[in-house]
Structures are given as structure tokens and as C-alpha cells.
Amino acid sequence: MNRHLYSILLYLLSPLLLAYLSLRAFKSPDYRGRWGERFGFSKLKPTQVLIHSVSMGETLAAIPLVKALMKAHPEWRFTITTTSPTGSAQVIKAFGDTVQHCYLPFDLPFSVRRFLRQLSPELCIIMETELWPNLLHQAHNLGCKLVLANARLSQKSANNHARFPELNRPMLQSLTAIAVQTQVEAERFIALGVDASRVQVCGSLKFDIQIDELKRQQATALRQQWRRTYVPVWVAGSVHPGEFAAVLAAHQQLLARFPRALLIMAPRHPEQFELAASSISQAGLQLVRRSAEVGISGDTQVLLGDTMGELLMLYGCADHAFVGGTLIENGGHNPLEPAAMGLSVCVGPHHWDFVQITALLADAGGLTVVTSADKLAERLLSLFEQPEMAQKASAAALSVVTNNRGALAKQLAVIEAIYLIK
Image 1 (cartoon, rainbow, N blue to C red):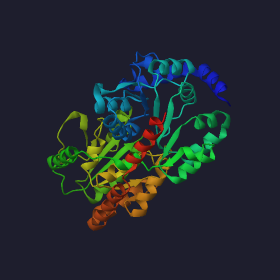
Image 2: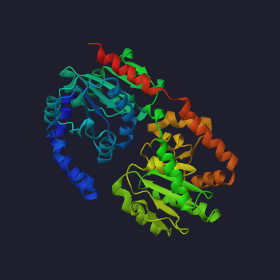
Image 3: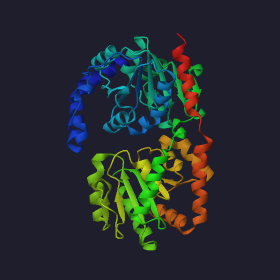
Image 4: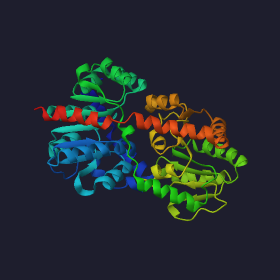
């Protein structure tokens, strides 16, 4: 399949895009506005740098990079796009009106063409994996330099790219530079036809996560307020439907040994908050919602993290963490966030989006892969029953983050090198 056939198929399937938006809007109010932006109908000013990050995780990784670029080049104008409301909220929170922001249009040729003609970007930075054939083709034709930053490419994704070489090879070859996270992933890009001179191993921006000291202080104060300083507290972060039951079953086993133990359960998406609340209640556990701003009592067994932008702080309230999207076939979420807060980490077996990071943490002793609710409970019980072992695991996780910093400077150098050389 080539790009022209891909575009025809997109046009034929475009009614399904409206159905998709309608379904998301039904589940979440955050999807009920700004539909015009999804089709390129935005009023935008020309910009020099366009940065695209998909959702909250990619946006959080992009923020330090964008801030470094803004500091080094105050004369540049920036537009940041996302595809999800959570990512949009992070952009607005981090930058306010200092950058131009909208949703990235669907990859329909007319939508992308209208979008790019308004912006006329000189440089486009795409975060991690979000490659769209028409976006890259048209940006390349406009003379825009294209950088894939903090690039990831799992073996599964590489296999998918290889299935459609006529579509994906030209798209990948249009990239001016790829700042890839690991050597293994660099080799996958090269095997797909990218010139090796355009690929540079820079590490992951996620290692350069900066923890606001105020978040640490807020987390410490919150746990003291809960009167759970010396009892087990753990977080199940970015969990999905399909994992709720396993997390709650593990917590029930923990409660049998530690009756005052507290689980902080934070679903990945806002539209999952209600299902999570009903799952907790059906499990017979005492629930308090974070959004309700009601104090935790001595009977509270689960705090539902049904707010946005607080997960990192909530990790700081706990001793250990489970990172979701890994007990189901999702690919997982970032285990470095709890590690950077000094927590040991558990993940399920389906963590292919973070396989190298997971391996680094596991090899150091800061992460354990679990395959079921029973195995998760077994690991948590071991950690809470053996404080010295738990302390070593937490220190090991934090050391991995500390020892692998430096990707920000390397990726910044890649971007400046290709953009400043005219």
C-alpha cells in the first residue's frame, strides 16, 4: 500500500472518524469540543517550530525539551499539538499563552495541507512514535526539517512498518534526524531503510524527569494528614479496565496482613473513573475519591485518583508502585515516574513500549515483573514485611534514573544541529 491508496482509504473511512469522536464525547466531556481542530479548521499564526506530542506521557517528556529550546532561542515561535485532552491540558498548564496550541488534525490530506499552510513551520519535532504519512510528506515538501525526538520503536511496531514498505519507507526516509532512545531501536530504524547517519542514540528524555520539590512536600504533608505514615501505602498508576480486578484482589490480600493498608488507584483515562469507582465498591472496599476533597478516615481502604495531573505527586505519597497497561496487552506506561520519586516498581508482562527501561530497572533490583494478582500481592507483602529489602529496591530504582540522565542535552544538540545548518 502506498500513500495515495492510504489517503483514499482514510477519505472512505472518514465517517468513522466522526463516529469515533462521538463515542469518545459520550464517554468523556473533554472530547465534546474543538472538533474543527481535528480537521484542520483552526485559525493559526505562522510559527517556526511545530512540536507534536500525542497524550499526557509524551507531553510531559516534551516539556523540558521545549523549555530548553525556548530559553536558548527566545526569538523562535512555537506551536505545540496533541491528540488527547489530557495532553492538551498539560500543554496549557505548562506554557499558558507563551506557545500556540491546538489538536493535530487527522491525517487527511486536505486537513493536513490546510494546517501546515497556516503554520509554515521551518522545523517539526515529533515525539516518540507518532508518525503520520501525509503529515510528514507535506511538511517535507514544504521544506520543513523533520526530527523524531525521544524516538521509540518496539519490535512489534517495526514489524508493522515492514508490512507496508511502500507507505512507511518514504515516510521514515523523509525524517531529517532521529534522536532514538537505545541502540537496539536505532538498528530497527536502520533496518527499515533510514540512513544510519540520520540516527543518533541519545537516551530517553524520561530519565531527565525533574521532580518539583513542592510536589514532594505536598505528598509528605498529604500522607501525614491521612495518618498513614507508618502503614503500607501503594499506588496502582495508569491502570486500565481489565486490570482493576487484579489490582483490587492484590490489595485485599495485602489488607489481610495489614488491615490499615491504603491503595491509591489512578486510572489512565478520565472516562474510566466511574467504572473504577464501581469496581472498588463491588469489591467491598471502602472508597474515597480524590476529587471530592474529603479527608481519608481510618476505614478508607482505597483512594481513587480521579483527578488529572496529580499522579506524580500521588506516587510521592506511597512506598511502592504498580504501573498499569501491563497486565493487559497495552504496552505499558512510564515506570520512571515512580522510580524518580524513590519507589520500587512492579509491572505486568506486557510492557513492550518500555522494554529497555524496564530491563534497566529490573537488572538494578528496582523493578519486578508480575504476571497476576497473586504475584503482585506476593511482591507487595514481601516488600512491606521486609523494610530493608524494600529500601534497597527503592534506592536501586532511583539510582537508575539518576545514572541515566543526560538525554535532554543530547537531543537538544541534535535539533539545533539540523535546524541551524541551513
